[in-house]
Amino acid sequence: MRRLFFVVLFFSAQSYAGDCVYSEVVGLQAQSGNVLVQVRASKKGDEYDYVPWKNLGGHDSKAIKSYQSIAQQAIATGSKIMLRFASDVNCYDTDYATVPIAFRLYEFGT
Image (tube, rainbow, N blue to C red; front, side, top):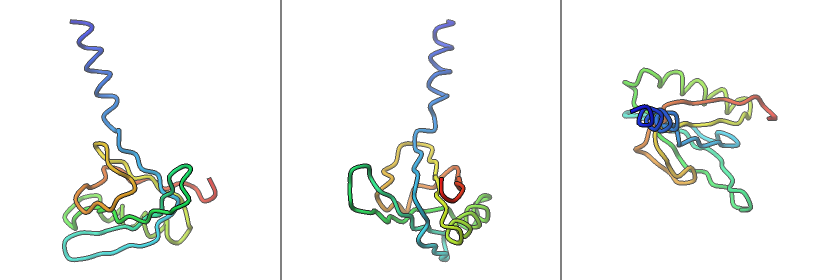
């Protein structure tokens, strides 16, 4: 029974597997159903910059005002950001369906 407890604890600690770090926010779009953010990302060893759109959530979401505010601040300061998703996502593809569970802003230059 004790082993089962530690196995469950181990898997619950790894529940946030979808962290996507982006070098900057390049666009923000508010529309009738939701708010989208366009981000710049680079794969290690790849010269191509990816600029996918990600869904920040619907206007009825409790976090949308905070997420939109952080995105606007990131545009103004050129800061890096991280979007955390509840499951694995492709950080380099446009995704209009999956909504982040956290939005982190990094200090400029870090």
